[in-house]
Length: 166
Image 1 (cartoon, rainbow, N blue to C red):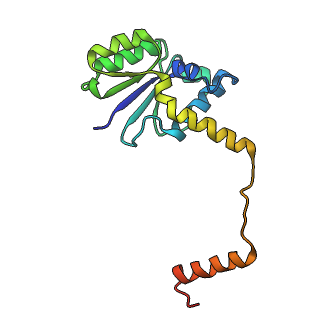
Image 2 (cartoon, rainbow, N blue to C red):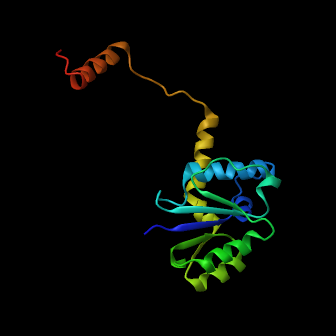
Image 3 (cartoon, rainbow, N blue to C red):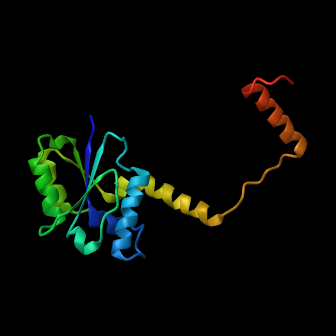
């Protein structure tokens, strides 16, 4: 059974705390790239829909992504998310990602799940912070093998993989 994750775009973007020092347009692009790279929605069978207030024209184009990005044009993202859940034939397979209590109270009676932004991004956020730290250290791995040991390893791998005789 695959799930549909509907993310309250700006609520998640501003609530995650990862992109605070960026302009909104750049933060949105970085957030979408983060979702694409880290897949906090899990399985490739799960569908991800990110809903933002406003129109794409005002905020610049959204680059290709393997998930759906919706700009609400004239209504709020909150109202669009509520409409999507209410119109769903199987709302029990929907998980709404938001910190907005009004949305959570609205979608729960339909059987949709609700996950806070922090829970949704929790493990992925920690791994991103760790990766950023590692990248900033820029240390080269230390190799403690001398030339004789390296040649022995090369010879052994050649024997195993290339079926060379010693």
